Image (cartoon, rainbow, N blue to C red; front, side):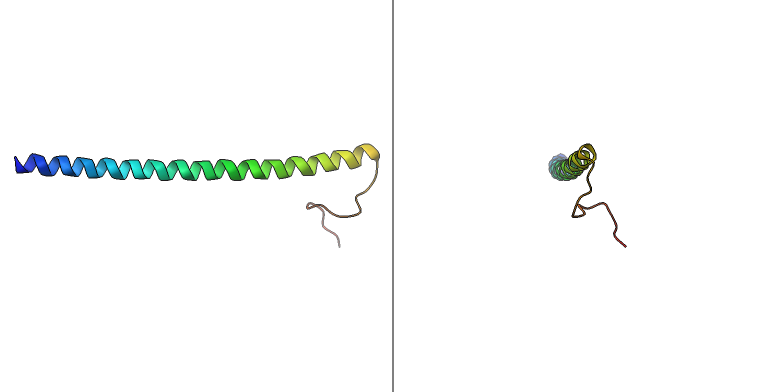
Length: 70
């Protein structure tokens, strides 16, 4: 009887740990998705500006993140 009680307690603890691990994994995945979306938005904005300069056939007066001046 006591053996089954210990086993049930162990199973509950293992289940708690698995749930905690799943929550952590979900939080990490959400953070990765948010970061990737932010990065994509920044890249989209740069492409939008570049298209504007290409269409007007002008050069930017200020570098917006991708050029290297020497």
